[in-house]
Image 1 (cartoon, rainbow, N blue to C red):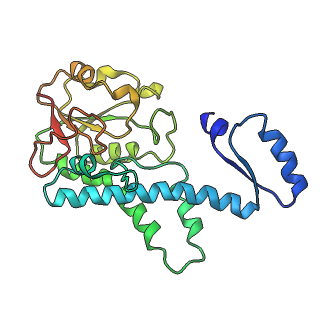
Image 2: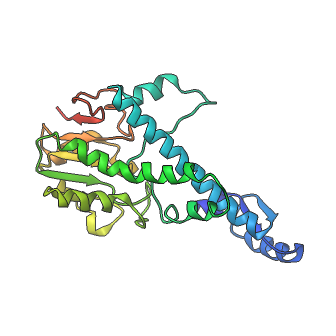
Image 3: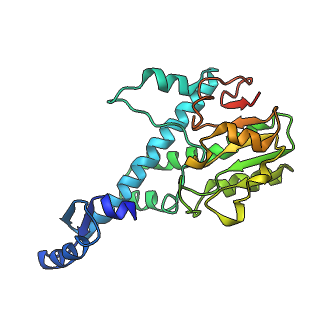
Length: 250
């Protein structure tokens, strides 16, 4: 609702008369700029904007992996080196969405160089496996996933990587619990009690109070995996060997 009300609305139309009819309708529901473009331009605009965000996320995730290889804290790098002109987004464990599995492929049909988008897909989809590989070095049996939706502060679950990491963790014989206040089936926070590891997948605003989460968990040795750098009090305080975004609550 917020997006429709405020975002630009390019209208793909074959002639001015069709556009004017569509414009009259859109003016009743949006304050965003309404533009007359061809149907091809309207669709390409949607695909390109979504994939630009996706490619940026893949770049941030790859930078995160590079920093890990040097034993460096990616969020310290971001917090000390960012400028308005060079604003790298935070890494993201669950950069996904219902369109990401198909929209990039539509753009690649007629170009000779497809590596940028295809590699972005591989990077973003592999972050869940990277997290699992690292938590295997932690003595843990019960693992909690925070956020099962594909978008923060939303109940959208299509293509969510939260389900992918849950399945992979179950295959590794972990006792897996999930908490997401936007999904009725996962809205019970009591499942977090006594978990050994918490993996932040979707940074909902409801998760911002880390101290409140610790009180629910009641395990002073619980490890927190936060690739996104969501919790500011932990952002620059990574302490475990080699995996700089696992944090201990004590």
